Image 1 (tube, rainbow, N blue to C red):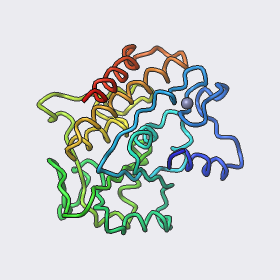
Image 2: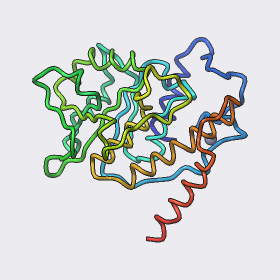
Image 3: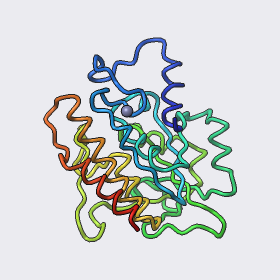
Image 4: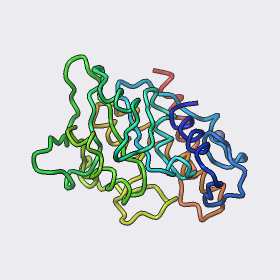
Length: 248
Ligand SMILES: [Zn+2]
């Protein structure tokens, strides 16, 4: 069990009514949240990373089977997850932010930043002895914007931001077909995290997270019988990447 699994159990325990997710009659795996017949848990890759992630999750986000912040926690050992609160941030959250081993960055589009805010748009470089901690605001786009505006405990931290179109001169469009995004360039949380790992100099982990995202996306769509826009090669691609990696 990782941080998102634990937060899911905790959030579930707070609910007085049963959370009604889409496809609620499906019998789901408690960990990957895909139907038991399409569970991807045995395929879960592990990464070694210098980076940490802190997922700040909006209310019922952690309950949604379509959440992709969970995929980051599958891969990256140092992933923390907390429920968002505007006025009463979790004490444990503040302790992570103040831990001297971490250098926290908020991941968010730069156009929302005030002019005096420090913004990193190229390589993420830390002070000596510190490791980057990437704070992801995990929810719908509207919820993420609210969290960004209304979290005073994050307002002094630098931002990490990237323009999807500018990556390697190629345009990125989301491969996230599970939720309808307000616009084509709106990436899923896990897709954003992959780009951030790239900026932190962890290209291999970035690729692994992309491949893992594709596995999740394909299997999820297969399990709910919606028109599957996922990559049917996804599982094969992940496995051949893992094989190549272990032969180095
Ligand atoms: Zn599973």
